[in-house]
Length: 140
Image (tube, rainbow, N blue to C red; front, side, top):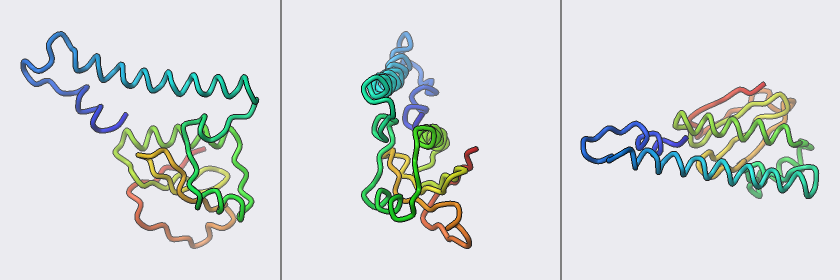
C-alpha cells in the first residue's frame, strides 16, 4: 500500500469522511488493483503455463533485460513472484529505488513503476557498490 492510500485510510478529519466514504473508496481501489493482477495472472497461466513478467505486475527495463541476458540470470515464475512481493512490502514502507537480494541475484528496482532496473548475479556481487537506493530487502 502506498503512502497516499495509507494516509487516506488512516485520516480521521472531522466531517471529511461521512459514513466512511473516503476509506471505502481507497479500499475499493486496492481491491480493484489486486483483482486486476489476479485476473491477469490467471489468464496467463491458463493460456501459456509460464507467466511473463508483466503478468506478475513486474516489468523489465531494457537495461535489466540486457543485463539478465549478459549475466545469464534465469528468472522463473518464482523469482518474479518474490520480486512482486518484495516491491509491495517496500512500497508499504516508503521505498522507491530499492535493492532486492534473492537467493539467485540482486536487483535494483523502481518500486513506484514496478520495474526491475538492473540485475547482478550472486557470483558477481563481490565488492559491488549500489548507489542511489533508499532501501534494501533480503528475500529467501
